[in-house]
Image (cartoon, rainbow, N blue to C red; front, side, top):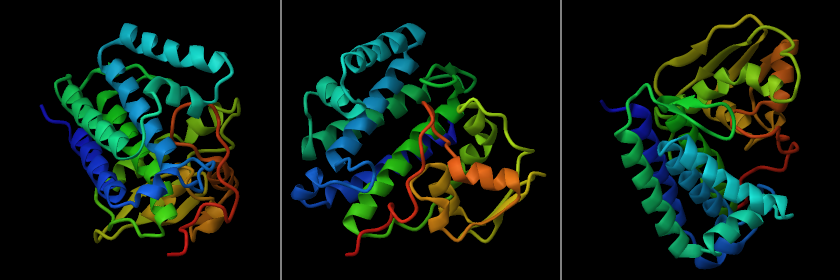
Length: 267
């Protein structure tokens, strides 16, 4: 049985690969607006995460062993970037691009033979297969934004697969607060997003509302933009508190970029 979210993840990989393949060689080591990570750092991180996802597909024991290797390096004082470099042997540039691309395709093949009801272990809460594939798509999409910003180019026109990212953004409303040991300040807000596809995407809610275009909403929940740098209309206490710290990805709490920091570099 095919799972559309796996195809969407594969398509997200292909889109980012095209941008990276056209990138000048010197850009691989240029700092981006994301924590000054270079494209080498970004793609190493994606590759490492896909390798961890492969381990997850092999079961809890394989996943736990893979994470333990990374955690041992971090316990020795390495940063996340340094630990990833150590595990990948400083793989970079075009060689990194092709290795990441091949691994992502193998991951899609591995996921495609699993039953749709399979539960996948991860760094945060475990996920069903569809949400797991969406999480891989979301991470690829969100980290890809730093590449497009660095190069000063617009992303390709939005695809319907963007709805997956909007969906995971909405569904992590409560988790955003619980991940910070906080209670949500109110009921889930309504989210109403305009799209290029002739329809609005709407998620009902009673805790205020977030209204605007789909891409800026996805950028905010993935922390590639500060909400102040978008035209999103945010109404109500719960909605404002959420958009200030929204985080749709697993892991410890992260702080969104300061207003004005994450933006497209002038061409």
